[in-house]
Amino acid sequence: MTERERMLRRLSAVEFAAHELHIYLDTHPNDTSAGAALNEYEKQAAALRKEFEEKFGPLTPGDDGNRWAWIADPWPWNN
Image (tube, rainbow, N blue to C red; front, side):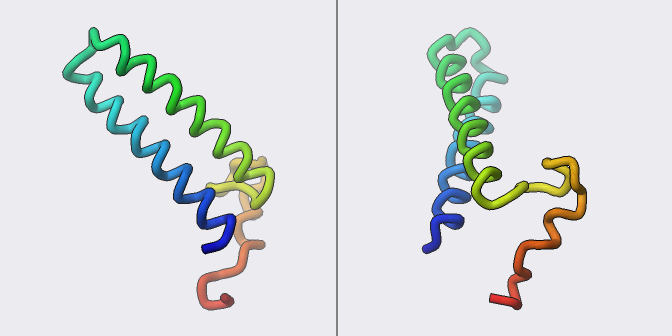
């Protein structure tokens, strides 16, 4: 597994945890420990996204102001 794949998996896991906490907080809005955990996961996700984009470029088109930057990455069939 490449460093890029490891970073994407870590980012995906942290964003999944944040998403699940959002759902949980829909039904448990007074759970302050879950709210604190959500804030921490969102901070981690932002930091991981920033680190990833600094190393490998934008995750989605337009993240860097250049909506065509994504096309510079190798396509799956080029690997």
